[in-house]
Image (cartoon, rainbow, N blue to C red; front, side):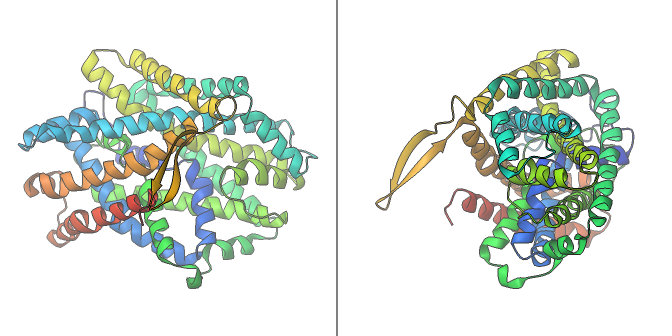
Length: 463
């Protein structure tokens, strides 16, 4: 049964949905993780494998999640409960909605803390704090930040307030206005930084690092890495794409909009690589993985380069923008549920969700200082002891990334591919080509679940 619109509102156009969904997908991981793992795992060979995985996992599941959202026109929790009832299925399928919202909520709690680092670095870069510092100086500045609970709390609080202010204003006045400004700004900042990288004389070295195919670096692990990146980069399985899909017009093509979002997300990741690595190579630095690349290596590079103060500030503004567009999408599913089920108005619901996520974020803040000692237990398998646990931040990240999100994506594929009637799926998807629908349906039913299962088994070290 089609519902024409959500009680929360509707995107004013297909373009706005594309901007919003791309904003949800593009996050901190796009800026450093994809370019790095591409360069270290075969360059262009990895990119080709990744694109194939996007077609087999990312795009089919995104289409399925958008279709569920648009058909239900409610929060993910209520959407899954309603569709399960309409399809005559067991109400336990409603768990899929709860799982996605819970995963997004937990991610929001620690994502806000990490985004706070970027927010802090905007002001540090603009104030010339990195000028004249060597590697030890930059590393010491970063360590001083993350080990200071009071400073982290201040930035975490500011970033969470930024999210609450956007989400509280609703779909049209809040989310839509934000993405219509932030996403063009993100692309504009990226292009400016790519132009800056081209002026530093090592642009082709960065291009080679990213795109030169090296098939000798490709292994089974490379393929699993590409599959995992294809799944995680699109914000699948956490309720964000489903709730955004609930605000999409019935007239919009799910295939075309999904393909555009996937293309834009990949373009951002590749442009980020073209912006970052020429700068790193021009400074004679090694492309370090993870937070070290962003918060230690790049500040050193910007400190030594002409115009580095301006472009370093722009780079960290880019990071904050990417984090902001992602985090508002993480907050939205829980806010929508409170409005639907508890009778709160949207501002109050946003304050409640933001407040609880802020409180949970305290565990992440303390994970870098007072609670930095890992907690957990040892498990002996085959005579070999393995420690299971970590800091609160590490456990939250492991739980969401390695268990909740893959499980959510797998259940979405199984629900749409195996439990909903084919007529319902065809009706919502609206593909006019019978051949195209059958190809998508086959991939969703077989290739995508197998791929996600392999990613899950790899993530928990079972293969």
